Structures are given as C-alpha cells and as structure tokens.
Length: 322
Image (cartoon, rainbow, N blue to C red; front, side, top):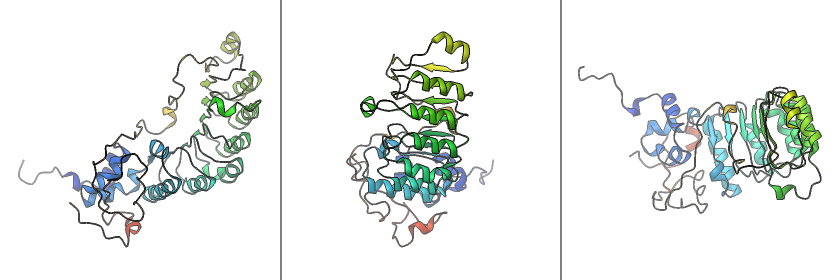
C-alpha cells in the first residue's frame, strides 16, 4: 500500500455516516463533546441523522419548563422532523404537547410520562400523531378515557400502550373502567398493554382481552379488584401472558416495550461532575439550558457554522474550531 492510503480520517466521513455513529453516544456527549471536535463533526451532529431518537427523559425530570421548551425547539430544528422516537418526562402544559404534534411527521414511539396534558388537547392534536405505534402516558393525571379514545381513534397502528399510575394518584377515584372500555373499543391491534395500579374491574379487563385479539402481554399488577380465573384465561386467552394483579416483585418500572421501538439502544443520562467543562459563553439558544442544579454550571458548549441547520446559528460569533 502506497502513501496515498484509501483509508480516510474520521473528519472526512460523510455527515450521514457520522450521524449514524453519533446516535450511539449519550445525549450529553452529542451536545457537549462532539461539536467541539471539528467543523465537520459539528455539522453532522446538528443534522437529522444524529437525532432520529430524542431521549431526554432523565434530564427533563429536573428541568425548568422554559429550558425544556428551548431544548425541544433546538432538537426539533436539528432533527428536521425526521425523529421517530421521543422520550420526555413531565411536560408542564398542553402547549408543549401541541409543539410535539407539530413536528411528529415521522414519529413512531412517543413516551410522555408524568406530563400535564389534558383530554381536550389530546382530542385536538391526536390526528397529527396518526403514525404512532407505541405510546406511554403513565402518571398523566389530567387525562382520562377521552384522551385514550382520541389516541385510539387516530393512532390506528398502535401496538403498545403503557398507562401506569401511582397508587396514591388514583386513591380518590372509584373506578377507571372507562379507560378500559376506551382501550378495548379503539385499540384492537394492541400487542402489549400495561395498566399497573389502575382501578380496573374484572369486567373491564375481560373486555380488553376479548376485543384486543392480538394482545400478547397484559400487565394488571396492582389492579386489586381484578379477579381472573387462571383456568379460564388459559383456555380462552392462551395467547396472552397476564401479569398480576399481585405484585410479586418491584420491576414494574422496567421497560417492557423495547420491541415496539425501531432501535435497541437506550440513551442514558450519565452523572457529570462539576468542573468537567469550562464556561465559554454560548448562544441565546443554548445558554442556560443546562443550569438545572445537576452540576452542569461550568458547561462549555460550542457550535461551528455550516451544516444543514446553519441558519439556526446565524448572528452568533462562534470561537474557532480547535
């Protein structure tokens, strides 16, 4: 092999290839490390191939509402509306839910646990979420059967639903069988359903088993009023694995829906120590997003011009590439 090697440096890879590689990095690395390597990497990480999956659940749990909105705007602009998975916890209002629906053209997996979204807003925006195949609306206390019915009527390809609740959050309710009826009547293609700690009756669960004929997994752990005859379930619904109502372990927080996602990777939010980064200014877009008390105060965040979203950085004086 001569001096003119056929092997190219990392910086010479096409942006699409780099984007696919960066998708295997953590959210922090993609936002705070990769952009500082070189201009070509910065262009790639701010392009849609790096953001087909947006998972900011851990970060959003302790995030202020205005910072969450800014982060969503930033990542949506970079994704070019091409993201197929979004995971964010604790949406504080309906307007952010509407924002998500406005950018959901390619969305397949939507996880919004602990969000303050209402029945009326779901009824308005559900038609814009028609492509969703997996939905997580656990611990969303402001929505109920109307929202589930709207999701079911609009999202005709839905195969996975997670609707868990905290026991104390439903202590003042007499029954949530209306949610069971909404699921049974509008989501016939469900294969996986998790309703831990909902106040369901035996009749409500039987209706789900009867109407959702493709169901493979039903989790009713903590649904204490459900009394299923094991022999009847085995004879009539042998295709379904039923968990509960007894809680025999503490793993109901486990993600049982990986097969509903197009990717096997799950981006984690790793702990960072103070001093890992040196404050070096930043744009109006990124400045302050990370000041949430998690030890990211000294963050250095640099982005360089160019790339498919160069217009988003117009007007900012970026430092030279290292």
